[in-house]
Length: 409
Ligand code: SAH
Ligand code: SF4
Image 1 (cartoon, rainbow, N blue to C red):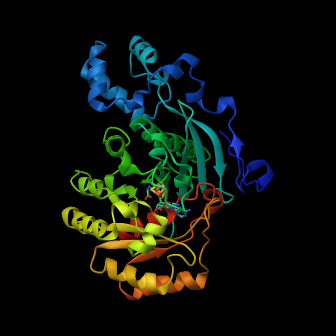
Image 2 (cartoon, helix red, strand yellow; image 1 turned 45 degrees about the horizontal axis):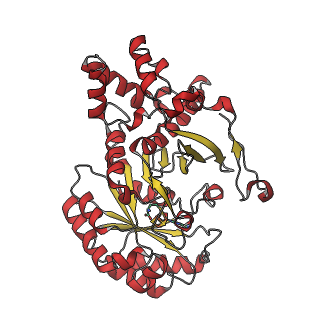
Image 3 (cartoon, rainbow, N blue to C red; image 1 turned 90 degrees about the vertical axis):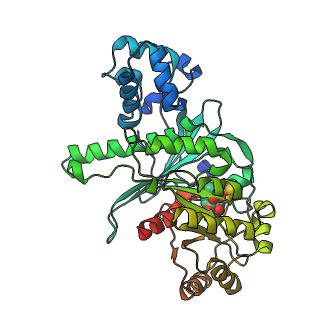
């Protein structure tokens, strides 16, 4: 499939983005027969249920394992290509299920080619965004391919600086809709890798697959807790996508009961908490959730989380000019996080169409950072690449987080 390169004509794009409408031949998931669109997605069938369904279809248990592997390890897009399965079984599956529940609608690629953003259409017409970021070898850091995924269509939490929040809540995504975003991006990476290998530019063991997934797209993952955790199980499954839990990062607005629940999960996930202000007055101004879970309660849950899991928390702090970026805010933030095993990601805001915010100038952000550093709070400040296509979404701050995760080992 082809992606348009940067087109900065706002007349045609509505934003300084490159927009490319996909042609019909570009996505075989989209070219399944029209009746297939009415069928449920097999990606929404849990492992246990798949085992059961396959046995109901008169197949031995190892067929379910082969099917699982075809779906999640090989990334099959049609039942037809699952040649390890007998034809009648494939035909029976085809009658009952479709594979992907999402179809790419629009694709953007950053001018430097490092970042793709895809707008997917769901079976009921809802739209979600997913981002793929490619990082080359960078000093001591290995090459990475990070996918930033959505967990809800829209979001109910109304953070004032967030484009998704400004649009309101549409609905929860199913586990299959969450996982399918990663599968799709992995296909793009696999075909790029295959091209490199075919051209002799890289050897098989030199190419990089998807290395990281960040739950930082549209929506609040912990407000869709069960489906998010089901998608984690699939991504983490050793016979499937096999992405280590330490390479999965869940970002939350700060839902206290769910942070406590997450601490009890068996996975060694990364947790990122969107803090964005160090005191209740400032935080409530931009994040309505702060009225339900004020900072003291949130920090209590965060400290318990670190104690229970022995894992650091990443705090995201979007810098909003003259709103949360004064030296006073920085000092309060340093006090709040004092002694906590954590890492702060400072992110200059991506101004959204409806929001009143702009980025602080370099002097203000450097001063803010310096105060944290002097107070001994580990932090990262980075203006990520691919910023030209992130602007439309206004929330894809994964670069800074990804770097921080890497820095933390
Ligand atoms: N709902 C979750 C995850 C999705 S938002 C959360 O809020 O954490 C992912 C991150 O992008 C959050 O830290 C969010 O605060 C941040 N974000 C939202 N809008 C932004 C903007 N306009 N500029 C920069 N970061 C933004
Ligand atoms: Fe929702 Fe996160 Fe945006 Fe807040 S920042 S509105 S929680 S998606």
